[in-house]
Length: 253
Image 1 (cartoon, rainbow, N blue to C red):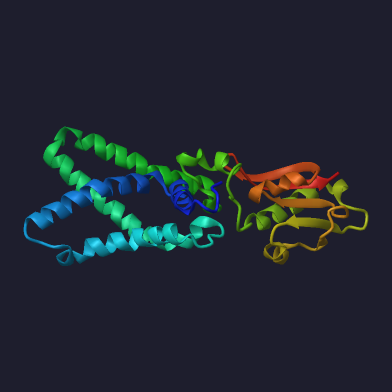
Image 2: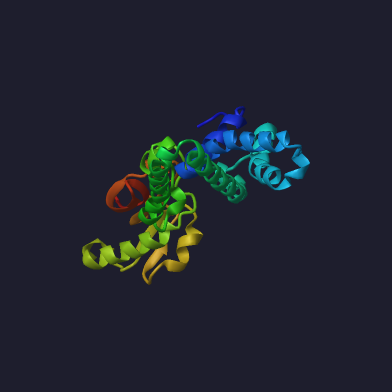
């Protein structure tokens, strides 16, 4: 990704590829319409102090990002450290869309209907992704990153490893249909790549955790940072959403 000495670009890029297109376009609209609103306000004898709501709202959304950019603190796993700015930024974007709508009705009424259709499509896009990625919405990346499937090859996606529960359930169902894969002693040793504590409560009877790849019967491999590619085995199945591999379950060769 970006070098540690380029926090400005790192912060902007991580935010840019994780935020929805609807939000990003709204924030772009925020720039000209904030200027128009403040200019009109000041021309009528107002001041920044007399319009605190807009100023505080914008500062609440953008100041933390600016602070991160200038101070360059450690940002482990990037975007989660400034998630709290999203509510303010969403309100800023919504205000910008309302201002844009008022401007269109006053100056370009013929484009008003087209703008409504475009906004509706932008609104449906994140809803579509929410449904298709369920319950792994946190692996979402927008079109600037090429979508979730493309971004998973370059950025961290399955960080929380919540897929381990589904992987264990599907492996148990797979072995019920293929009992010849179960060792003679009836115990299934599995190596879980990732935080095994998340998966342990869901282990069925006969399943045991193993920390030795040479002795495990099956691998449940997290795809974070593509570390699963270091393990050799015959893939049985994978959990994926929209072409993005989330978890791979394989039999040790």
